[in-house]
Picture 1: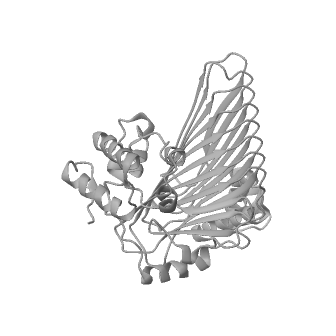
Picture 2: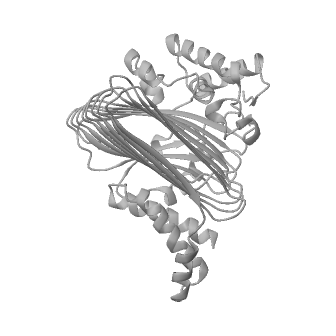
Picture 3: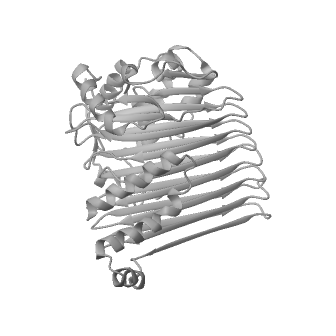
Length: 441
């Protein structure tokens, strides 16, 4: 049963949509109650709009208008189309974990020969296992956010990755989200990564579409727990179809002396939003978040981050870059909270936007909430056009205008891309930026 949700949907339509999701991911008992409560939470608000402060610049009642019907479970024809898309999306040297139209695809994934200390299951398998602690962690996201609540109610599958204490992965894990089914449909996924103590891993996420797949919505959420003295590098690449919508949420918790390094690049989708809450639960930890929006046409991309410093002696850095052409719109909202016990916090954030046309728009909203007195915190935001003097310098030395612009744009986003520790993944991000620049030319 496929039912579209809109801002005016109530009662029977919502119940029917929840029933359709339950058919895809059966889960009784406490999980069923959580999903019911999450749908009730979404129903009270509906699609978020500009009167909700966190959604002031991304009014989904205007940009998205409705939640499309749930995508059907992929059949053989859809999986074949996804396999063709995977040939261009796969990254050499990584272990692929593939989700097609919101369902885990074991035939396209590499789950054999796992390294010692690594467990990978589909969300369905994890929920069927009856692990109460795991279920609680999977549903730990804040359902006061309407799109998180909708995801909690409607999720159909995902990947659960558990990495034992002392395990150092030699290959990055690559979760590939592929839209390959019918147009005008939506997919809801949730994944979990638990990294034990003294462990290290790299996680890559890609969002892509099979050839010809259009007008879909990807609703994804990810829960990450990083153990004491562990490191996780996370790379997100959003290259959805040009008329797609991508709404992604993350909740990250760090133990003591942990290190989390995340890089995100949005160059696809008509509308995208990445919202993440990163919580420091152990002393001496560090977070580095870096992002790049590459936008043109009428694209709208929103990055909203909450850095929650609750314990002493932790550090966070946020570096965000946006390159905006035509009538595109980039949003960055960064909020740092330093709680009373979080003395010796060192937190800084900087966002810069490069406007390539008179109609391009950038909204940057950095916020600091500091309740401790022994801290070092700061933020900054700038926006402007390409430096005319530098353009003149390059053109005077024989470079065509577009080539000169491309060189300056590559230098502008380079600081964020350089944060990627893995050489191959850094090259991949640079290649993605290069494709965007060539398409612009």
